[in-house]
Length: 161
Image (cartoon, rainbow, N blue to C red):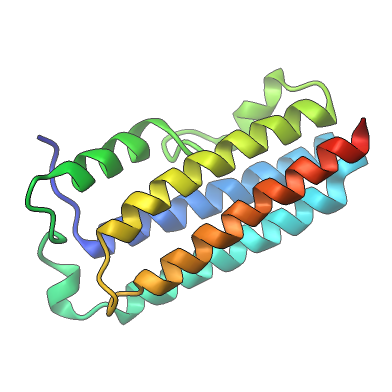
């Protein structure tokens, strides 16, 4: 079993995911001027999500920041570990590197949709590991916003056809 995360560490991962997402969108905006306005708007939304997670981290009490979150079977922790290690605007690599193989606005939008889906999956696991007091409702709000990002990206793809 992987090492359990405490709430502080999980929010730190979420902040990094959002930073990487914003970097991806800004770099993609430079490479694909046809969709740059949309990509820059999404980057700004990711910046706001990062600030939300940072504020949630700041509000953690000492007891929430230290012990592992409640996960008696260890499933949520294993899920979060796998997602953090392997997916979602990969927190271990530069998200800009993902743009190297993308040649069209459609490809970048499809890639962005996949990354947003991965983010939603991570945040769904995060939501299960966070108490109401620690900001579960805020995580739910961010999930809804990330879902809206997929809708926005999908609509833009349709408009490009």
